[in-house]
Length: 356
Ligand code: B12
Ligand code: SF4
Ligand code: SF4
Image 1 (cartoon, rainbow, N blue to C red):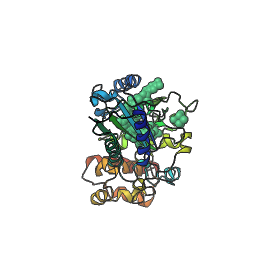
Image 2 (cartoon, protein in one colour; image 1 turned 30 degrees about the vertical axis):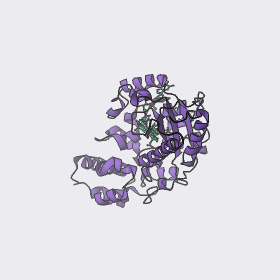
Image 3 (tube, helix red, strand yellow; image 1 turned 120 degrees about the horizontal axis):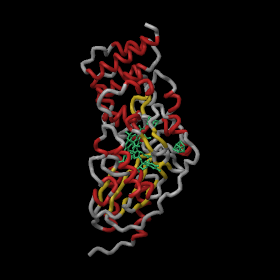
Image 4 (spheres, rainbow, N blue to C red; image 1 turned 60 degrees about the horizontal axis):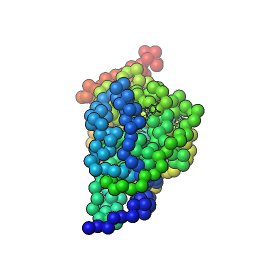
């Protein structure tokens, strides 16, 4: 029979191993997320999830880790920084002919990379104590990741609905290791440090926040450019500006992100100069170029057709320069109805602005 592990010492080692594997912060939570379950239910009832049917598709599993993976007693919550240093976010956003790609998406897709690291952590624990029950998750499963992170003491859920940490801001991914070990839990974060600030709510280009802590995803640019499969609602197109994949405005403006640290992961650094590319240049990529240059990148999630849809919106909001107009005209006969309709809309914006 394997020896019963010294649980406090094991918890301590898990955190140290997590840090060695590139996680900036590791905490341990129990499985009671009752308060968050109610918030989730209200959010779903209001329909704020839009087309993201998966958000409501798993019954109560999302707020009960022990229903998702029976036998789970604790959740090890981990965060990994992703912000590449010197990405000139504000400058890129302020140049309407440039494409703004949200900073988490400039390099390699995080899902596999982070999950593999969590898996390594589990293997390290196994080496120490022998077989035990575990599951590793990053974003892709029905898990209330921010609520778990708050319970594990990694930070608080801010008014922008993201997990914030006083020493690190919010530019990080969250991941979890569900375990069947009765490890000692960390004190949950009970204080919140948004105070009277409302910068994120005020800056949101599409006014997607219904109020503090509540986001109507259907208006969020991240949803519109990444999750939404159909046409982008016309009344929101002008508000999207040059944001073509995700949006960072409610993080850029957050005072706690002054403390964000650049990522140590080379894989998250920008590929193909995506942090400074022009809209017209990206719109002229053919499908093969798109597939080649987005291999292993989060941008693949959009697919080529929606990539063009998003860029057409950006081009419609750009100044009427020759490269912008030529790029749009080159795609007026594009075979996809979705793309054509957005190109027509974009050309109409230029015609309206020039009074034609
Ligand atoms: C669905 C989803 C989205 C949707 C909806 C976002 C949302 N706020 O729910 C869309 C597509 C819009 C989106 C966008 C983004 N996302 Co996202 N997303 C998720 C996902 C899959 C689920 C989030 C969720 O559970 N939503 C359900 C609703 C109910 O939760 P909520 O709005 O956060 O509300 C919570 C609190 O605000 C509170 N609450 C709710 N109502 C009320 C009311 C009151 C009065 C109070 C006090 C509290 C309260 O309780 C709720 C439950 O904990 C998670 C991964 C995961 N599995 O958790 C990633 C995740 C949240 N996303 C992430 C990221 C990085 C982003 C973007 C920054 C990407 C980008 N640059 O474009 C944007 C940020 C937009 C924003 N401000 O949230 C990271 C966030 C990391 C962090 N530091 O927090 C996550 C954790 C993925 C990951 N593994 O790293 N996302
Ligand atoms: S990501 Fe952008 S659009 Fe979405 S809530 Fe934040 S500021 Fe608004
Ligand atoms: S911008 Fe202000 S209100 Fe919004 S999350 Fe940051 S501290 Fe909180």
